Length: 455
Image (cartoon, rainbow, N blue to C red; front, top):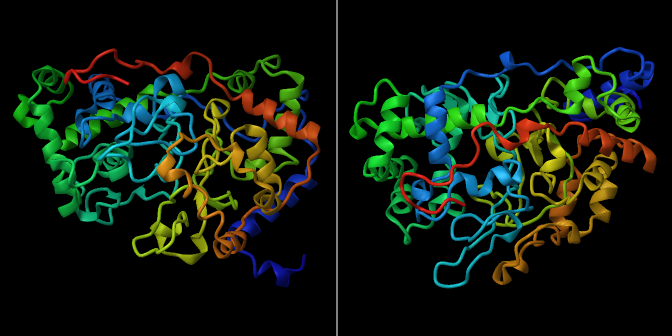
């Protein structure tokens, strides 16, 4: 490759090439040498402090369907303790569904769902880390004072003041998403208000909470500025959920973490070989580096399209163009945020839309994205059977022009690994699974103050 040809590549691809050259020219790292891999340990000081009383309250709100438009879904429905803080399917069913995980169904009838969720439900492990400054697959929520409220979000200047963290800011948006928790304007007063302006629905949710006697003491105990139910605001609700998420799923007690702490026997021989590949020849750590195994950036991987996509406002076709929907920069087309990898073996399916059912599939995709895109088998997806939606799940994948556009935006240089090496990488991914932390700190409540069923 010449210097002239490098100038035509996206910056991300140049960085990947240089990193690959460096890795290949460096002597192979050996797990038996006593040296540590190129990452730092995760320690408690890397996380934000959490208000214990607020976290206890946030746990109840997280699982209470009272905060959804139709009172039929909670945050915990799609981020469940029994499902490693996710939902175990490629694209979930939001409000209007019944059950959790792979057993969740979409009842037919006058209020039947109109779309699946546009993207895979991400796991929540270690989101309370101080380094987390943007959230969602496209980073549409970030720490930024552009609107004078501390965050750059879809609510822009209408986001309320006083949110204590990016997790608190994030907590507000599933509530106003029609297919997530809001419902449609003709179904409930919250969605109708949201349809008029995004922030008009939040006070109506607060009114519901104020009317539940069991919540008042929790809010008074958690927040110094709350003396009665009338002092509760949507900011208190969001901050409580933020404190809960920040402290609930802190996970750094895996075999890999024990190895980093100095126990050479914590990893098997196969896992050590996979670790060498991860930090060496395979180049995985180019993007999955740092203590949380993510660069917190965006990359285009030509992941096969699936489902309705998260279309831009004036987009006329079902597709998902990723980061460009937030940045409006064409070079960000089809780029999605690098996920952190702790507990990754527990959080299948993989990809921003869940198009790979297992670790081997998604790893092989990374080795040669364009070939993998051509070879992709739709039988890998895990979807609830929804007869009136099934024939639209592959509409973007069957669009020849969209597929060609997707192929033009790839930030990964192919890497050649044999079957044994792929197996070793899979083994190392399992070494990232935590132990006691996987279950969460406080766990799922058995009941909530509203009296509504807990999923």
